[in-house]
Length: 276
Image (cartoon, rainbow, N blue to C red; front, top):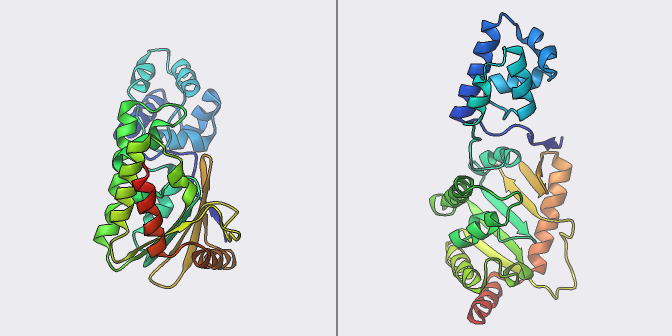
């Protein structure tokens, strides 16, 4: 059965857990059970519980309503100012990231950006530098660290097969400028030299295309299960239904036959690099 990844709760952080414990302590000091507190702040029991357990970032409205319940001491407002989310992977991607670590094969088709496992640091910074709303310097560094950190899989798991198919126009976009793109191509070429990494370019002038429905990630687990993952604006979806996953694996297999061979893909990238 297809399974939606969690989207509404950020990864916990020390400050979120501390704030949650503070809320719980104030509530209990006021002699209120969670059930009694819920109607006073007009948030669901699930939301209040998630905040108290440090799993959810409270919003300003919750803080103001809770302040009114606790006597307007201003303590929650001051604590709220120091809250931070755990930086790094998006909430909807974390489950897939855990599955990646046990996979025996990982296949990726991308038509928007160079896949994260192949991105150079300068390119990563350009990607997150274009985020809307803008990230703080701290958030940007955290995102860069998380993305670069995932790339160790290519080096540390020589017995895992990595296949990438990337649209030609992705490299033509020149995100971050010509120099960033040149260094990106060099980084991609270096990564693809690894024995367990295969890179293919889908040429722009191809008359056939098996994955027109969008980006796709696939993996196979050690016990032979085939899973898939698709991602869009502010969301991601883990696909575990066997029939649906097998269909997507078939589409990827067809796309591999339609894309340039690894050798021809390398030649195309080298020519593109030389033209920058």
